[in-house]
Image (cartoon, rainbow, N blue to C red):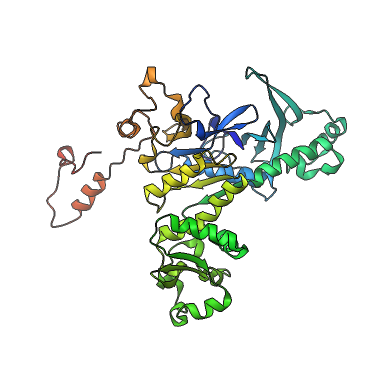
Length: 443
Protein backbone atom coordinates (compact mmCIF):
# COMPACT_ATOMS: atom_id res chain seq x y z
CA UNK A 1 0.00 0.00 0.00
CA UNK A 2 1.10 3.54 -0.68
CA UNK A 3 2.01 5.55 2.40
CA UNK A 4 3.52 8.71 0.92
CA UNK A 5 5.10 10.24 -2.16
CA UNK A 6 7.64 13.07 -1.97
CA UNK A 7 8.41 15.16 -5.05
CA UNK A 8 11.06 17.82 -5.69
CA UNK A 9 11.82 19.75 -8.88
CA UNK A 10 9.51 17.56 -10.99
CA UNK A 11 7.11 19.05 -13.55
CA UNK A 12 5.08 21.76 -11.82
CA UNK A 13 6.52 21.06 -8.35
CA UNK A 14 9.63 23.19 -7.94
CA UNK A 15 10.03 22.70 -4.18
CA UNK A 16 9.83 19.63 -1.96
CA UNK A 17 6.20 18.50 -1.86
CA UNK A 18 4.75 15.53 0.02
CA UNK A 19 1.51 13.70 -0.69
CA UNK A 20 0.78 11.48 2.30
CA UNK A 21 -1.91 8.87 2.91
CA UNK A 22 -0.92 8.26 6.52
CA UNK A 23 -3.93 8.38 8.81
CA UNK A 24 -4.19 10.62 11.85
CA UNK A 25 -5.06 8.17 14.61
CA UNK A 26 -6.02 11.00 16.97
CA UNK A 27 -9.25 11.19 15.01
CA UNK A 28 -11.68 8.32 15.60
CA UNK A 29 -14.08 9.48 12.91
CA UNK A 30 -14.82 7.05 10.06
CA UNK A 31 -12.50 4.34 11.36
CA UNK A 32 -13.56 2.15 8.44
CA UNK A 33 -11.78 4.59 6.09
CA UNK A 34 -8.33 3.55 7.34
CA UNK A 35 -6.39 0.31 7.31
CA UNK A 36 -3.11 -0.91 8.90
CA UNK A 37 0.07 -0.62 6.81
CA UNK A 38 2.85 -2.09 8.89
CA UNK A 39 2.82 -0.37 12.27
CA UNK A 40 0.97 2.69 11.03
CA UNK A 41 -2.40 3.23 9.34
CA UNK A 42 -3.20 4.71 5.95
CA UNK A 43 -6.40 6.01 4.40
CA UNK A 44 -8.13 3.91 1.77
CA UNK A 45 -8.94 6.81 -0.51
CA UNK A 46 -7.94 10.41 -1.16
CA UNK A 47 -9.10 13.14 -3.50
CA UNK A 48 -7.21 16.15 -4.85
CA UNK A 49 -9.27 19.21 -5.76
CA UNK A 50 -8.16 22.57 -7.10
CA UNK A 51 -8.11 24.92 -10.10
CA UNK A 52 -7.20 23.85 -13.60
CA UNK A 53 -3.46 23.77 -14.27
CA UNK A 54 -2.59 23.73 -10.57
CA UNK A 55 -0.83 20.36 -10.45
CA UNK A 56 -3.50 17.67 -10.11
CA UNK A 57 -2.71 15.94 -13.39
CA UNK A 58 1.01 16.38 -12.76
CA UNK A 59 0.65 14.34 -9.58
CA UNK A 60 -1.03 11.57 -11.59
CA UNK A 61 1.72 11.74 -14.24
CA UNK A 62 4.39 11.42 -11.58
CA UNK A 63 2.68 8.33 -10.16
CA UNK A 64 2.63 6.83 -13.66
CA UNK A 65 6.28 7.76 -14.20
CA UNK A 66 7.31 6.21 -10.89
CA UNK A 67 5.58 2.98 -11.90
CA UNK A 68 7.30 3.02 -15.27
CA UNK A 69 10.74 3.67 -13.83
CA UNK A 70 10.49 0.78 -11.38
CA UNK A 71 9.11 -1.56 -14.05
CA UNK A 72 11.80 -0.45 -16.52
CA UNK A 73 9.47 0.81 -19.26
CA UNK A 74 11.80 3.67 -20.29
CA UNK A 75 9.87 6.26 -18.30
CA UNK A 76 11.93 9.28 -17.32
CA UNK A 77 11.43 12.06 -14.81
CA UNK A 78 11.03 15.60 -16.11
CA UNK A 79 12.42 18.52 -14.17
CA UNK A 80 10.59 21.75 -13.39
CA UNK A 81 10.49 23.89 -16.52
CA UNK A 82 11.52 27.09 -14.73
CA UNK A 83 14.33 25.65 -12.61
CA UNK A 84 18.02 25.79 -13.48
CA UNK A 85 18.56 22.66 -11.39
CA UNK A 86 18.66 19.62 -13.67
CA UNK A 87 18.20 17.09 -10.85
CA UNK A 88 14.71 15.98 -9.85
CA UNK A 89 13.86 13.75 -6.91
CA UNK A 90 11.23 11.21 -5.93
CA UNK A 91 10.81 9.29 -2.69
CA UNK A 92 8.07 6.73 -2.10
CA UNK A 93 7.11 5.05 1.16
CA UNK A 94 5.05 1.88 0.92
CA UNK A 95 4.14 -1.19 2.95
CA UNK A 96 4.46 -4.84 2.01
CA UNK A 97 3.96 -7.98 4.09
CA UNK A 98 3.42 -5.92 7.25
CA UNK A 99 6.67 -3.95 6.84
CA UNK A 100 7.36 -0.39 5.72
CA UNK A 101 9.92 0.62 3.10
CA UNK A 102 11.34 3.86 1.71
CA UNK A 103 12.85 4.18 -1.76
CA UNK A 104 14.45 7.44 -2.95
CA UNK A 105 15.91 8.36 -6.33
CA UNK A 106 17.42 11.44 -7.96
CA UNK A 107 17.61 11.79 -11.72
CA UNK A 108 19.77 14.26 -13.63
CA UNK A 109 17.81 15.24 -16.72
CA UNK A 110 20.89 16.86 -18.27
CA UNK A 111 23.11 13.78 -18.20
CA UNK A 112 20.18 11.25 -18.20
CA UNK A 113 21.65 9.54 -15.14
CA UNK A 114 20.35 8.32 -11.80
CA UNK A 115 22.74 10.06 -9.44
CA UNK A 116 21.17 8.85 -6.20
CA UNK A 117 19.43 5.71 -4.97
CA UNK A 118 18.53 4.73 -1.45
CA UNK A 119 16.42 1.86 -0.15
CA UNK A 120 15.64 1.45 3.54
CA UNK A 121 13.36 -0.55 5.80
CA UNK A 122 11.47 1.76 8.15
CA UNK A 123 11.28 0.38 11.67
CA UNK A 124 9.01 1.74 14.39
CA UNK A 125 8.85 0.99 18.11
CA UNK A 126 5.64 0.71 20.11
CA UNK A 127 5.64 4.49 20.63
CA UNK A 128 5.79 5.21 16.91
CA UNK A 129 9.39 6.38 16.91
CA UNK A 130 11.04 5.50 13.63
CA UNK A 131 14.47 4.57 12.44
CA UNK A 132 15.71 3.35 9.09
CA UNK A 133 17.73 0.27 8.28
CA UNK A 134 19.51 1.14 5.04
CA UNK A 135 19.76 -1.72 2.54
CA UNK A 136 21.71 0.23 -0.03
CA UNK A 137 22.86 3.76 -0.77
CA UNK A 138 24.34 5.07 -3.98
CA UNK A 139 25.23 8.75 -3.87
CA UNK A 140 27.18 9.79 -6.93
CA UNK A 141 27.56 13.41 -5.81
CA UNK A 142 29.39 12.38 -2.64
CA UNK A 143 30.85 9.20 -4.13
CA UNK A 144 29.20 7.03 -1.46
CA UNK A 145 28.29 3.40 -2.10
CA UNK A 146 27.02 1.53 0.92
CA UNK A 147 25.36 -1.84 1.48
CA UNK A 148 25.41 -4.67 3.98
CA UNK A 149 26.54 -6.75 1.01
CA UNK A 150 30.16 -5.68 0.44
CA UNK A 151 30.22 -7.12 -3.08
CA UNK A 152 27.18 -5.06 -4.01
CA UNK A 153 28.82 -1.89 -2.64
CA UNK A 154 31.87 -2.55 -4.81
CA UNK A 155 29.75 -3.10 -7.92
CA UNK A 156 27.79 0.14 -7.43
CA UNK A 157 30.83 2.21 -8.31
CA UNK A 158 31.24 0.37 -11.62
CA UNK A 159 27.57 0.11 -12.58
CA UNK A 160 26.04 2.34 -15.24
CA UNK A 161 24.07 5.34 -14.01
CA UNK A 162 21.75 5.26 -17.00
CA UNK A 163 19.22 3.11 -15.16
CA UNK A 164 18.36 1.91 -11.66
CA UNK A 165 20.78 -0.51 -10.05
CA UNK A 166 18.25 -3.33 -10.08
CA UNK A 167 18.01 -3.00 -13.87
CA UNK A 168 21.74 -2.82 -14.67
CA UNK A 169 23.05 -5.49 -12.31
CA UNK A 170 22.34 -9.21 -12.22
CA UNK A 171 20.22 -9.25 -9.06
CA UNK A 172 20.55 -13.02 -8.69
CA UNK A 173 24.15 -12.42 -7.56
CA UNK A 174 23.12 -10.00 -4.80
CA UNK A 175 20.38 -11.25 -2.42
CA UNK A 176 19.74 -7.80 -0.93
CA UNK A 177 19.29 -6.19 -4.34
CA UNK A 178 17.15 -9.09 -5.50
CA UNK A 179 14.84 -8.79 -2.49
CA UNK A 180 14.63 -5.03 -2.95
CA UNK A 181 13.72 -5.48 -6.61
CA UNK A 182 10.99 -8.01 -5.82
CA UNK A 183 9.42 -5.62 -3.30
CA UNK A 184 9.56 -2.61 -5.62
CA UNK A 185 8.30 -4.48 -8.68
CA UNK A 186 5.40 -5.96 -6.71
CA UNK A 187 4.49 -2.49 -5.43
CA UNK A 188 4.72 -0.79 -8.84
CA UNK A 189 2.82 -3.62 -10.52
CA UNK A 190 -0.08 -3.04 -8.12
CA UNK A 191 -0.61 0.52 -9.41
CA UNK A 192 -3.14 1.31 -12.15
CA UNK A 193 -3.13 4.86 -13.52
CA UNK A 194 -6.01 5.93 -15.76
CA UNK A 195 -7.28 9.15 -17.27
CA UNK A 196 -11.06 9.50 -17.45
CA UNK A 197 -10.63 11.57 -20.63
CA UNK A 198 -8.98 8.60 -22.33
CA UNK A 199 -9.93 5.46 -20.43
CA UNK A 200 -9.48 2.25 -22.43
CA UNK A 201 -12.15 -0.42 -22.68
CA UNK A 202 -9.60 -3.20 -23.23
CA UNK A 203 -9.50 -4.34 -19.61
CA UNK A 204 -13.29 -4.57 -19.42
CA UNK A 205 -13.38 -6.51 -22.71
CA UNK A 206 -10.81 -8.99 -21.41
CA UNK A 207 -12.68 -9.49 -18.14
CA UNK A 208 -15.97 -9.97 -20.00
CA UNK A 209 -14.30 -12.64 -22.15
CA UNK A 210 -12.54 -14.36 -19.23
CA UNK A 211 -15.31 -16.23 -17.42
CA UNK A 212 -19.01 -16.15 -16.62
CA UNK A 213 -18.18 -15.03 -13.09
CA UNK A 214 -16.17 -12.04 -14.34
CA UNK A 215 -18.84 -11.17 -16.88
CA UNK A 216 -21.48 -11.14 -14.17
CA UNK A 217 -19.37 -8.86 -11.95
CA UNK A 218 -18.88 -6.31 -14.72
CA UNK A 219 -22.53 -6.49 -15.80
CA UNK A 220 -23.75 -6.08 -12.23
CA UNK A 221 -21.44 -3.10 -11.69
CA UNK A 222 -22.74 -1.34 -14.79
CA UNK A 223 -26.40 -2.16 -14.03
CA UNK A 224 -26.05 -1.19 -10.38
CA UNK A 225 -24.85 2.23 -11.50
CA UNK A 226 -28.56 2.87 -12.22
CA UNK A 227 -28.08 3.54 -15.92
CA UNK A 228 -31.53 2.19 -17.01
CA UNK A 229 -29.87 -0.93 -18.42
CA UNK A 230 -31.55 -4.33 -18.33
CA UNK A 231 -28.28 -6.09 -19.08
CA UNK A 232 -24.70 -5.59 -20.20
CA UNK A 233 -22.97 -8.45 -22.01
CA UNK A 234 -20.16 -9.60 -24.25
CA UNK A 235 -21.57 -11.31 -27.33
CA UNK A 236 -20.06 -14.50 -28.68
CA UNK A 237 -19.20 -14.68 -32.39
CA UNK A 238 -22.47 -16.51 -33.05
CA UNK A 239 -24.52 -13.96 -31.10
CA UNK A 240 -22.67 -11.05 -32.66
CA UNK A 241 -23.44 -12.24 -36.18
CA UNK A 242 -27.18 -11.92 -35.65
CA UNK A 243 -27.46 -9.28 -32.92
CA UNK A 244 -26.99 -6.05 -34.87
CA UNK A 245 -27.73 -4.48 -38.19
CA UNK A 246 -24.45 -4.73 -40.06
CA UNK A 247 -25.39 -1.98 -42.50
CA UNK A 248 -25.47 0.32 -39.51
CA UNK A 249 -22.17 -0.97 -38.14
CA UNK A 250 -20.35 -0.44 -41.43
CA UNK A 251 -20.72 3.31 -41.12
CA UNK A 252 -17.80 5.34 -39.86
CA UNK A 253 -17.64 5.04 -36.04
CA UNK A 254 -17.43 8.79 -35.56
CA UNK A 255 -20.74 9.22 -37.35
CA UNK A 256 -22.33 6.93 -34.77
CA UNK A 257 -21.37 9.10 -31.85
CA UNK A 258 -18.07 7.56 -30.75
CA UNK A 259 -16.43 10.54 -29.08
CA UNK A 260 -13.74 9.07 -26.85
CA UNK A 261 -10.26 8.84 -28.38
CA UNK A 262 -9.60 5.69 -26.39
CA UNK A 263 -12.30 3.75 -28.21
CA UNK A 264 -11.92 4.98 -31.78
CA UNK A 265 -10.83 2.68 -34.56
CA UNK A 266 -7.77 0.49 -33.98
CA UNK A 267 -7.37 -3.27 -34.20
CA UNK A 268 -9.52 -3.85 -31.14
CA UNK A 269 -12.52 -1.87 -32.40
CA UNK A 270 -14.41 -4.95 -33.61
CA UNK A 271 -13.71 -6.64 -30.28
CA UNK A 272 -15.27 -3.68 -28.49
CA UNK A 273 -18.33 -3.89 -30.71
CA UNK A 274 -19.09 -7.20 -29.00
CA UNK A 275 -20.02 -5.26 -25.84
CA UNK A 276 -23.79 -4.90 -25.92
CA UNK A 277 -26.24 -2.98 -23.76
CA UNK A 278 -29.80 -4.20 -23.41
CA UNK A 279 -32.64 -1.67 -23.03
CA UNK A 280 -36.19 -3.06 -22.71
CA UNK A 281 -35.09 -6.26 -24.40
CA UNK A 282 -33.36 -4.50 -27.33
CA UNK A 283 -29.61 -5.14 -27.78
CA UNK A 284 -27.46 -2.26 -29.03
CA UNK A 285 -23.66 -1.98 -29.41
CA UNK A 286 -22.57 -0.09 -26.32
CA UNK A 287 -19.66 1.62 -28.04
CA UNK A 288 -21.96 3.28 -30.57
CA UNK A 289 -25.16 3.97 -28.67
CA UNK A 290 -24.41 4.42 -24.97
CA UNK A 291 -23.71 7.84 -23.51
CA UNK A 292 -20.17 8.92 -22.73
CA UNK A 293 -20.82 8.48 -19.02
CA UNK A 294 -22.20 4.96 -19.46
CA UNK A 295 -19.20 3.90 -21.54
CA UNK A 296 -16.86 5.37 -18.95
CA UNK A 297 -18.62 3.46 -16.18
CA UNK A 298 -18.22 0.25 -18.20
CA UNK A 299 -14.53 0.94 -18.81
CA UNK A 300 -13.91 1.94 -15.20
CA UNK A 301 -15.72 -1.10 -13.80
CA UNK A 302 -12.86 -3.51 -14.52
CA UNK A 303 -10.29 -1.28 -12.80
CA UNK A 304 -12.44 -0.72 -9.71
CA UNK A 305 -13.32 -4.39 -9.31
CA UNK A 306 -9.73 -5.50 -9.94
CA UNK A 307 -8.44 -3.05 -7.35
CA UNK A 308 -10.92 -4.16 -4.70
CA UNK A 309 -10.42 -7.88 -5.36
CA UNK A 310 -6.63 -7.83 -5.60
CA UNK A 311 -5.76 -4.98 -3.24
CA UNK A 312 -4.43 -2.66 -5.94
CA UNK A 313 -3.78 1.09 -5.97
CA UNK A 314 -6.06 2.86 -8.43
CA UNK A 315 -5.02 6.37 -9.50
CA UNK A 316 -7.65 8.22 -11.55
CA UNK A 317 -7.34 11.62 -13.17
CA UNK A 318 -10.69 13.48 -13.16
CA UNK A 319 -12.75 10.68 -11.62
CA UNK A 320 -15.90 12.81 -11.80
CA UNK A 321 -15.56 13.47 -15.54
CA UNK A 322 -18.91 12.68 -17.24
CA UNK A 323 -20.23 10.94 -14.12
CA UNK A 324 -23.15 12.01 -11.97
CA UNK A 325 -21.97 13.14 -8.56
CA UNK A 326 -23.78 10.24 -6.87
CA UNK A 327 -21.85 7.73 -8.98
CA UNK A 328 -18.56 9.35 -8.03
CA UNK A 329 -19.49 9.19 -4.34
CA UNK A 330 -20.54 5.55 -4.65
CA UNK A 331 -17.19 4.57 -6.18
CA UNK A 332 -15.30 6.34 -3.40
CA UNK A 333 -17.58 4.75 -0.79
CA UNK A 334 -16.70 1.30 -2.17
CA UNK A 335 -13.05 1.89 -1.29
CA UNK A 336 -13.89 3.41 2.11
CA UNK A 337 -16.10 0.47 3.05
CA UNK A 338 -14.96 -1.80 5.89
CA UNK A 339 -15.07 -4.80 3.52
CA UNK A 340 -12.13 -3.30 1.63
CA UNK A 341 -8.94 -4.04 3.55
CA UNK A 342 -6.21 -3.60 0.94
CA UNK A 343 -7.18 -1.43 -2.06
CA UNK A 344 -6.56 2.31 -2.32
CA UNK A 345 -8.08 5.00 -4.55
CA UNK A 346 -6.37 8.30 -5.38
CA UNK A 347 -8.41 10.62 -7.59
CA UNK A 348 -8.31 14.17 -8.87
CA UNK A 349 -11.72 15.84 -8.99
CA UNK A 350 -13.50 19.15 -9.58
CA UNK A 351 -16.82 18.33 -7.90
CA UNK A 352 -17.03 20.50 -4.75
CA UNK A 353 -19.81 18.32 -3.34
CA UNK A 354 -17.06 15.80 -2.52
CA UNK A 355 -15.75 18.21 0.12
CA UNK A 356 -17.66 16.22 2.70
CA UNK A 357 -16.33 15.23 6.11
CA UNK A 358 -19.82 14.68 7.47
CA UNK A 359 -20.65 11.51 5.54
CA UNK A 360 -17.72 10.56 3.28
CA UNK A 361 -14.17 11.51 4.27
CA UNK A 362 -11.79 12.01 7.13
CA UNK A 363 -9.96 15.35 6.97
CA UNK A 364 -6.66 13.81 5.87
CA UNK A 365 -8.37 12.23 2.85
CA UNK A 366 -9.07 15.60 1.22
CA UNK A 367 -6.18 17.34 -0.54
CA UNK A 368 -5.92 20.65 -2.37
CA UNK A 369 -3.70 21.73 -5.24
CA UNK A 370 -2.84 25.39 -5.56
CA UNK A 371 -0.47 27.45 -7.69
CA UNK A 372 0.64 31.04 -7.46
CA UNK A 373 3.20 33.02 -9.47
CA UNK A 374 6.07 31.42 -7.54
CA UNK A 375 5.20 27.84 -6.56
CA UNK A 376 2.76 24.95 -6.79
CA UNK A 377 1.43 23.47 -3.57
CA UNK A 378 -0.23 20.28 -2.34
CA UNK A 379 -1.76 20.35 1.13
CA UNK A 380 -4.29 18.39 3.12
CA UNK A 381 -7.45 19.49 4.90
CA UNK A 382 -5.86 17.76 7.89
CA UNK A 383 -3.49 20.73 8.15
CA UNK A 384 -6.43 22.97 9.11
CA UNK A 385 -7.38 22.94 12.78
CA UNK A 386 -10.57 23.72 14.65
CA UNK A 387 -8.82 26.13 17.00
CA UNK A 388 -6.96 28.22 14.41
CA UNK A 389 -9.02 27.82 11.26
CA UNK A 390 -12.47 26.82 12.49
CA UNK A 391 -12.35 23.64 10.40
CA UNK A 392 -14.03 20.66 12.07
CA UNK A 393 -15.38 17.39 10.71
CA UNK A 394 -18.87 18.88 10.89
CA UNK A 395 -17.93 22.13 9.13
CA UNK A 396 -19.68 23.09 5.90
CA UNK A 397 -16.56 22.69 3.77
CA UNK A 398 -18.24 23.71 0.53
CA UNK A 399 -19.12 27.12 1.93
CA UNK A 400 -15.62 27.53 3.38
CA UNK A 401 -14.09 26.59 0.04
CA UNK A 402 -16.32 28.96 -1.94
CA UNK A 403 -15.32 31.78 0.41
CA UNK A 404 -11.63 31.04 -0.20
CA UNK A 405 -10.88 29.95 3.37
CA UNK A 406 -9.31 26.68 2.16
CA UNK A 407 -7.43 28.21 -0.76
CA UNK A 408 -7.02 26.36 -4.08
CA UNK A 409 -9.84 28.47 -5.54
CA UNK A 410 -9.62 29.85 -9.09
CA UNK A 411 -10.53 33.48 -9.80
CA UNK A 412 -11.69 33.54 -13.40
CA UNK A 413 -12.74 36.81 -14.95
CA UNK A 414 -14.30 35.88 -18.26
CA UNK A 415 -16.28 39.13 -18.31
CA UNK A 416 -13.25 40.84 -19.85
CA UNK A 417 -13.72 38.51 -22.81
CA UNK A 418 -17.39 39.46 -22.87
CA UNK A 419 -16.49 43.15 -23.06
CA UNK A 420 -14.03 42.52 -25.88
CA UNK A 421 -16.53 40.37 -27.78
CA UNK A 422 -19.26 42.98 -27.37
CA UNK A 423 -16.91 45.78 -28.40
CA UNK A 424 -16.37 44.00 -31.71
CA UNK A 425 -20.08 43.88 -32.40
CA UNK A 426 -21.47 46.83 -34.35
CA UNK A 427 -24.90 46.41 -32.76
CA UNK A 428 -23.71 46.43 -29.15
CA UNK A 429 -23.59 49.52 -27.00
CA UNK A 430 -20.09 49.92 -25.59
CA UNK A 431 -19.75 49.28 -21.89
CA UNK A 432 -17.20 51.13 -19.79
CA UNK A 433 -14.88 48.72 -18.00
CA UNK A 434 -14.88 50.80 -14.84
CA UNK A 435 -18.68 50.55 -14.63
CA UNK A 436 -19.30 46.94 -15.42
CA UNK A 437 -22.84 45.60 -15.00
CA UNK A 438 -23.72 43.37 -12.09
CA UNK A 439 -23.01 39.69 -12.60
CA UNK A 440 -26.17 37.58 -13.02
CA UNK A 441 -25.04 35.07 -10.43
CA UNK A 442 -23.22 34.88 -7.15
CA UNK A 443 -19.80 33.20 -7.17
